[in-house]
Structure formats: C-alpha cells, structure tokens
Length: 458
Ligand code: PFF
Image 1: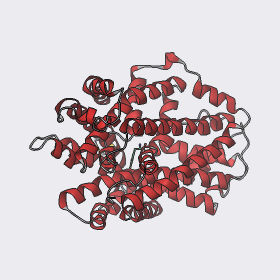
Image 2 (image 1 turned 180 degrees about the vertical axis):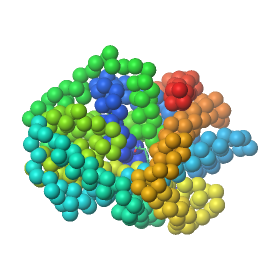
Image 3 (image 1 turned 120 degrees about the vertical axis):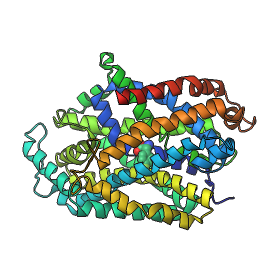
Image 4 (image 1 turned 90 degrees about the vertical axis):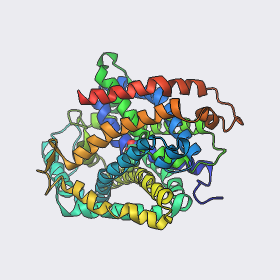
C-alpha cells in the first residue's frame, strides 16, 4: 500500500474528525453560542452543518480524491490550463496564515497545561465558593492570563514547542505520523470530555445552564445569528482551508465518501454538544453567567475560576488543557499537511524536506503573532493587531472565497459527472443524495456563502 494513503477506515475517519474537532469547537463554539442566545443558535448550527456543511465537505472530498494531488494540483489536474488552481492557491494561503496564529494558541494550551500541573496557575487562590464574590479571583486569573499570554518570552517558547511537536508528528508521514496520532488522541479527547461532563453535569444548579443551552428561544434569531451559524459551520468542519482536499487524496478508492462526511459532521456536532455540557452548567452553577465567554477569556480566565471552585482544581484543569491541546494538535497537523502536500507534489520534495521547508518559517511568523499581545501590541493593520488581522483576513475573507470557488468548480466546471462518480465510487455503491448535494453546491451554498462575505463587509 502506498505510504501516502491512510491505512484503515477508522484511521482516516479519526484523522479527519481530528482535523475538524479543534479550538473552533471547544473554544469558539461556546462563545458564539452565548453571544447568539443559546439553544436557538445551536439548532441553526445543526441545521447548517447538515444542509450545507456536509454537501460542501462532499464537494471537497470529491475534488481531492479525484484530483489525487495537493489543493492546487487537484484543480490543475481536473481543469488543465484553466485558472481554477487559484482557488486552491488561496486555500493554501489561508491554511498557512491560520497556522501562524492558531499555533500560538496551541502554545498557550501547552503553557496552561504546564502551569496547571506545576500548580502556578492556582498559586495564591484558595478554594472559591459557588455564588460568592469572584472579583478578587477575577483579578488573579486575569493577571495570570496576562502573564502567560501577554509577555514576550514564555508564550513564544511554548509556541515553538508546539511547532516542534507538530514537526515530529508530520515527519512520521501519513500513516505512521498523522493516522497513528489521531488513532490514539481522538479517543483520549472523547474520554476527557465525557469525564469533564460527568463532573459539571452533577454540580448543584447545573440544570439552569443545561436548560439555557437546550431550550430554544426563537425570538433570539436574527440575520446575524444565521450568518454566525454559517460561519461556525465552515470553520468547525475545516472547510475552505484545503485540508479536506488534501486528506481525501489520501483516502483509498473504495472509501465511501457520504458516510465518511456524515460521521465527521456528527462527531464534530457531538464534541460541540459535550463542550456545551461542560461549560454552561459549570458557569451557571457557580454564578459566573455574567462572565464573558468570548475568546481567550472563557478558556483562560473563567474556566480556571470554575476549576478553583471544585475539588482537585489542578487535576481538572490539567485534564481540560490537555484536551484542548489534543484538539489543537490534531488540527494543526492537518493544516500544515496542506503545504507539505503542495511542496511534495509541486517540487517533488521528499517528505522530510517538505516538512522542513513548510515548518522553517513558522517560528518567526508565529513569534510575530505571539508578540502582537506584548511588544508589538501597538502595531496595527487596519486598526487590528497582527494576530487579529490575520485571523479576520483568513477566516472572514479567504475561507468563504475558497469555499465558493470549490462549490462553483465542482458544481459547474469540473469534468462531467465528477461528483456522482466520487459519491458512488464509480457506480459500485449507491448514492441517494448525489442529486441533492449537486443542487446545494450549485445554487444554495455559493449564494449563502456569498452572503457571509457581504455581511462581513457591511
Ligand atoms: N475545524 C478546525 C477547528 O475548529 O479548529 C479548523 C482548523 C483550524 C483546523 C485551524 C486546523 C487549524 F490549524
């Protein structure tokens, strides 16, 4: 068997789910859910994943497996001499930019893991009382967050450590590196998440948080809510980043794409749900509902406070940050692989050389992103720090543009019957949804994604 192929069905699913399940599900999901009114948003998000996420994922899978190359090469092979490869190039650009800032956050998770184990995170904080006055603890954890994230040296060092770990996995190759890592870490991620759920769901007063998370208030839905649900769908399923095109080129010819996409989407939804069951009950049980759950605050300030209310805060905190690191690692491995595949296909490099070439600029670029929280915080691009600018540019502009490109290409311009051939494995298996998927990627998906883009601009 070719080494550039996943070795087993479980392995390819674990790797793809590992890519999808990342900080977007565990950190971004609770924040957007809180900001958009809870259960009604959750329902919308589930709807978007099923109606749009799965079809667009199938379009990327079909393109990748039929193209048997990297994100640019797939377009080139299927449409030689045409400019469609630019969509692939933008996907690779998006993936590289996202890597530069995402790996910084992966570094933070390592730093928090270390500080949970060493005890420094909880030094000077006694056991907190549910419903009590959290203002002193707020100040302590905010101070720690500034110390761990907004100083120049330690965050950069932990980011570099994260880069080294990624390099170690990626030089191992598709089967011995990515697949093996995912086979071990994905089950660990589920075990940790379920264990944390057991703790938070049994807290006194947890019910109010669960109710808020699960009881929809449809009056909370606005146009903005819908757009946010769409955005969360694309980010959480790793669409538009070239990842799924790259990974599906490693799928064997007999892999059934529709069930694979369905499993990946379901597992991603399941992780989002479980994360909600960890966070909302805990926050409501300790009376922290007024805390902002946005971005870094939730994970690096509010949750440590929650752990400080519980017995064995260090252990729970270490479990949580390990979980976050695992989720981030299986995602960064997939996104760096996009550029590695490109170097290998385009320049015929060995895997080792492609890994080094791809990873070599990362320490410097990620350091610049990391320093935008400290020494470079006054340096602004369009009024944003470097970190925020790269995040907005890649997430709000590049990802939708690439997804529109993929949909229009597969829907209208790819060799005739490509989607159907891929979904039916050359007419050897049945596909009941090929027609519906085609309709969605031809008409519905491009229009809705274009709406996200327009909304972002206005
Ligand atoms: N679905 C991934 C997530 O939610 O985190 C998207 C992703 C982002 C994958 C960044 C890889 C990555 F480096």
